Image 1 (cartoon, rainbow, N blue to C red):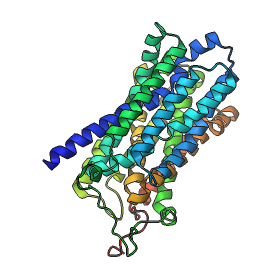
Image 2 (image 1 turned 120 degrees about the vertical axis):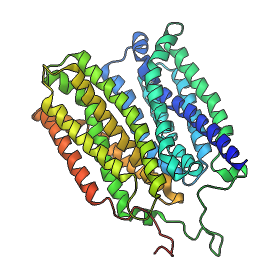
Image 3 (image 1 turned 30 degrees about the vertical axis):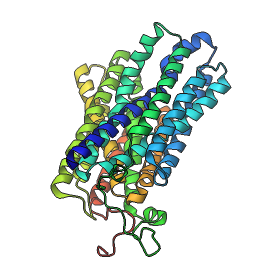
Image 4 (image 1 turned 90 degrees about the vertical axis):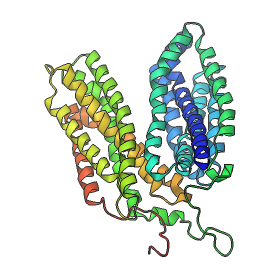
Length: 429
């Protein structure tokens, strides 16, 4: 009976988070989806469009870090639901606006609200699923972004046939508001909230009633493994962003490929990434189920290292073998392989950062490594394009390839360090 109860709540909670995060992501991109229609009504130049989209990106990076810390201090379901509510309200108000200043200000608020979405999901997943299931469900939940990103333009285009852009944003925002109420009612922070035993045992209480084995933030920050993960995530996310942002230009400008081939490469990369995320979660969970988690090393490391090596190899082949006469199929295969090998580690770094941290600081741990990933994404922008400007796209990709290979080698030698972050129980010490 208890098994059925866990199964029921897991299904309901996961479904609520999946639908909720799909709406989070869809409403993060609504301005991009309706941008052509907006430009027909309101005179916006490229600088205006850049200001609006950049304001959201900056706010999102800040908010996601803050939200990770907050998820350790307050109810995850309230954080997730309130963020979705705010996203919906911002989209509705955006549909009433007509000036660049209001657009940028509201989209900045949207970015702040967007950051409240993912960290609570990681917290809830850790509380409701066994360590040997955690990676799989983390990866499956992340496909909500692929779903929203893939279907979003189609939904927006179909709505444009019957409604103007203001109605589209107002409707999508209203759906968010209604769904946020449903998420608040359906999501439960942990099994004990519904009378079931917690999967993860709570810390023992000290004499004054406070948890005696809770780690402090200082102890987390002094864990070398946190910074090993952060550095690896920075490199992997930065290299992935280099390929997704500049790979198409490299193919067209330096390898003489058509725009169609460049677009097809990007699509193949995203499809490979979707498969890679799920495969990484599922296969690494199998490894955890076989040997379990320990204080040193992590069963997910072998798959993580294999995929990072695959990233380096596929980048080398992409840079060294593609010419103007290369078969289209070969280019698509390289894109799919790179997507598979890059999105897999991105999922695994998040999972490992969460599960290796103390229960009371798992959100903070993920927030720190995710912030470092955002730094990598920034370095893949202007610094990377500056190298390409002064030398070539090939040279810039060569630098990214070296960084990825060096990070893989360094991670290999550090794979067996202490991976349990924070304070160890006294009997283990």
